[in-house]
Amino acid sequence: MYQVSELVKRYIDICNDPDALRHLVNEAIDLFREEWRKRRDPFIEIANRNRVIVLGDIHGDLGTELRILEKVSVEELRKEDTHLVFLGDYVDRGPNQVEVLASVLKLKLEFPESVTVLRGNHESTPDLRVAPHDFPDELIRRYGLRRGNELNLEFEKLFYIMPLTALLERSVLLLHGGLPTTTYDRAATLQEYLGGMGPTDKRIIRAEILWNDPIEREIVRAPSPRGIGYLFGRRLTRWVNKRFKIEYVIRGHEVPAEGYKINHDGRVITLVSRIGPPYFNVKATYLDLNLSREDWLRNVRKSIKVAVEQVL
Ligand SMILES: [Mn+2]
Image (spheres, rainbow, N blue to C red):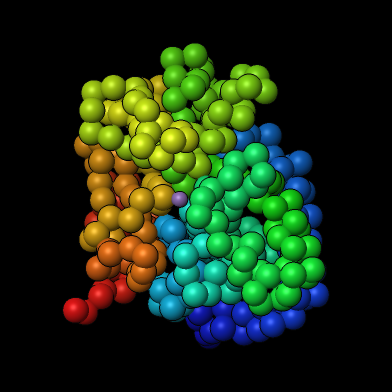
């Protein structure tokens, strides 16, 4: 009986071997591609689990990742009793960005039915660039110019096909940034809302899911200070709730000082699962849902747990 954190500590050795790392990325590409092929919906469905753990942005903070994964046993994942959801932003800004991304991919490959790895806006591709983006520089620093650049191209291929959304028990939507606005009032199904009704929709929706943030105004959307995506308002969240029976949206993307924040009458929950510069949050959190309880849906907010607390 051992914990997932122990497994991760063994996994990260792979980061010292660029060939093994490249092999891992290619295996992950094959797996994501296969999953897209089998899936009809734009979202990943997660159902019939006793426990679901959700992590927000990690940004290279391996220490916090380990603190969270030491609460989960390997056995739980193996039995498909527990499901792990990662909300994206594995890389940039942190000391162990390669380790964090590699460990998450290894977990996905080892337990494909028990792990969901969503894309964040820092899983950047040439058509959707994030700045500052120090991941390519980190790859060059560690593996040299030629190998670093080769690896970066492989990672970009992977980022293109990473999934964007997951749906838990048909009532909790998991994504990195926020609810898309472009199919508001047009989509009749959640498939149309998240997958779009044409190729133009698809591109815009992808950017919105990765970049949007909630705002406490009675609107659908407003321009975002990020220069990409939108701020989505209470009216949009209410519409999504009424039309698609989505009770909660769990997302990362922002770094609340207390490790989490609540918007839109409790329906939008932001988690951050990292600590340290360049941010000033004093707590890192994660969500630990006990779905074997009949009232789990009413206790989502109470299922936010503190992983690390900064002692000043
Ligand atoms: Mn982000």
